[in-house]
Length: 601
View (cartoon, rainbow, N blue to C red):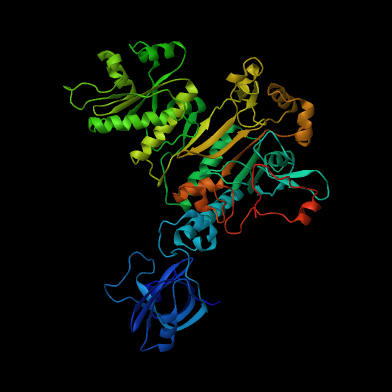
């Protein structure tokens, strides 16, 4: 080995020891006769001091060294002189007296600083990702990802799970998300699809009798990208036999709590995790993945508002449209001009998601003052007091009123909550607010296609007590689906599966899928279900999202070693790229130029 210790290892108890270190020049300070080099590797930074008088050869090499040069340093450890310790470094109480230095490799000047957290244009970071990954914050994120994966593996192994890999090359399933297609050279005109998830394989493994399976699966979806989505991603995939919903919730909750407390410095807001029904989540937070680190809940005041003098509220309530109020603590404690600007900006915000407007009422801190805002004049004193009591409002609070179609109100509540929380600095990244959302509708109505469609996927089992209404009132049937949400993201999702062929056929018929077509897509699964399949259920974590949350990062690109940009490109290797004519010929593919697009050079 070219090193006896890492650059994060040495402590005062190593005083006097002869050591060899190797790493990158993190920072260099030349004080003439003395040169100080902060030497960095993955484990940390050690200060090396080189004295020209006692070690002239080492001093000469150190004089020529620059940031990111790779050096080997031999020397002795000593405690730093009194008053010179660096409390910001774990090795800050010691330094190494450099006696011999070997230049292992020089470096060009990097396109951005490695040794400081400057704001760097993301395009530049992606182009030089191998350098971006040298930065201490990025290395911390990748090591955290490793620790989370290792912890999960060990935890599930102790629970009797078997790690099994499933194929990446699968068959196309048009009913799912848009897929990446792979042409087959041997089977002319046919295509593989990169697996969107191991869904069917993990159910087949339950038929195979493994009972407890998991893997860290690579998944591929050709979807529009955003901060928490990539075309290729990793999920913890897990399936169990002979269980009910509660068994899965208890297993995953125990795993997440143990993982967060063992390998991260995050704080759990709920332990045990909070549970919400889908209806409760939508009615209170406007989202099925609410951020519960803060309040700002929506309160339904339809009964009070319908009796107010505001004609729009009267007619909306009569038509079954809700009237919701969000109470913003202390939101009225600003000047009248600023208040009008803020509420005007919020109204523009909710209009962007389809709302027709936003009413508001500012509650005075002084009882002698009047309620401000355009809504107040339509409510009697008793009605105002009733609204304040229902929403828990206090003097100085701001009440925001929304009324429209339920879906529009949900969207407006969601965007208001997220915007207000950001403005009020309520989104503490050190807090993880995990919660379960359960009792989703099994199916939802597709207006465009005039049919029912699964809200999760077509293998999700209904709640057994709702089965009698499957054909007569499908919209009221709940699915045995469960989502683990955290800080406004869906962290994991799964369900208890259908394990009986006759029930699967009923679901197919309900969603307008004929059995013959279904057999073409997944006949292997339907056939397997005739050979004694056990009751089973599963869940899939978005590993990238979990690590992102545990690292306190704003998007998953910060915790993936080599991510794609928001346009799905890899700028470092220039992917995607053109195939050669020979490659295209081998798979019998011809490129048809897009008449609207100029040819690329």
